[in-house]
Length: 129
Image (cartoon, rainbow, N blue to C red; front, side, top):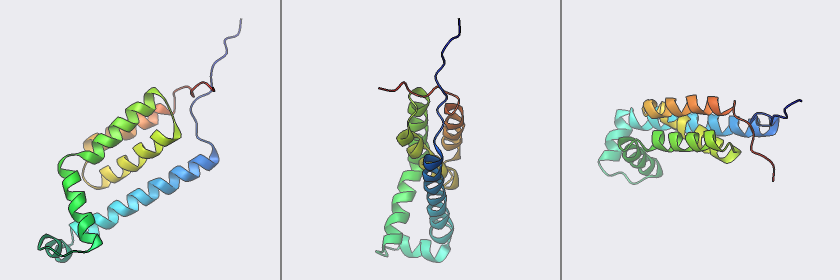
């Protein structure tokens, strides 16, 4: 007797395009902050001296989140939830946080989350209804 199996969790082409946009924007913003604010000594020193711009506010927020490993923790939590119950929203959050975390030196948890995201593509899709 044949056994009916559910299809694997696989984003549609439209969803894949959305995931590509989110991933590239996350990596782009992380690269921008890392190389043009955090590692740029002129901007970094100006922000630490109290310059009040949106770039410096983002710089300070990124530094605080980095110290508490927030990027990696969010990526790992969303990836684990996506592994248990696959959904596009969790996949998007985990992808964005993992991409940002890898670039922003939260690579330990972010890389683990990326691996779990890859494994989640081998899970069956949730049952409809």
